[in-house]
Image (cartoon, rainbow, N blue to C red; front, side, top):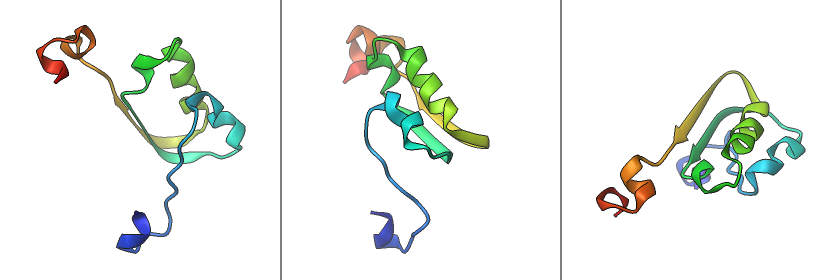
Length: 76
C-alpha cells in the first residue's frame, strides 16, 4: 500500500500482539485500535506494545466506549 504512494520507509506487520517482543525490533510509531478489549489480559497486550517502542514514540490507542462494549446504539 505504501509503495503505491512512493513511501519506502514503512513496514506493515500483522501478527499476535503478544509476540511483538520476539521480533527483536523497535518502532517509532504504533497503532493498536480495537485490539486490547478482545484480549483475555489487555494489560499484557499493552505491555507487549510498550516494550518495542523507542523513546519519544507515538502510540495511538483506540478503545471502545461504553455503548460499544455493551452492544448498544454506539456499536453500529
